[in-house]
Image (cartoon, rainbow, N blue to C red; front, side, top):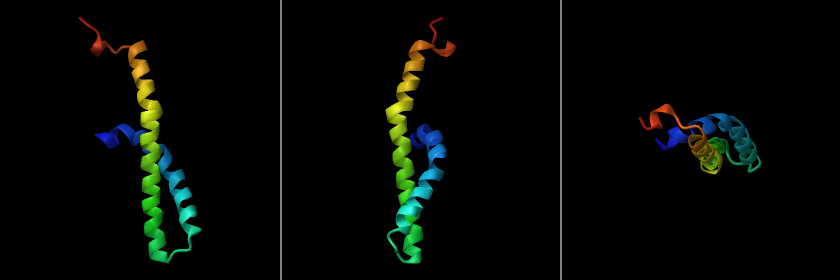
Length: 78
């Protein structure tokens, strides 16, 4: 359920962050196998960190604000 909350941010930012992580790892000049594994692990860590940061920093606050300003019909008292 936790990953579901951040799935859209994760979708949006995983590819650019994977490229960034590959560039960072390439500068370390590791052996080929360690290079590949390190790139994937760093990419995953960066992607999840950014996705959770965006969720807790922006998305949850925006959704809370939206629910106060525009309540859904399911939440309306009958």
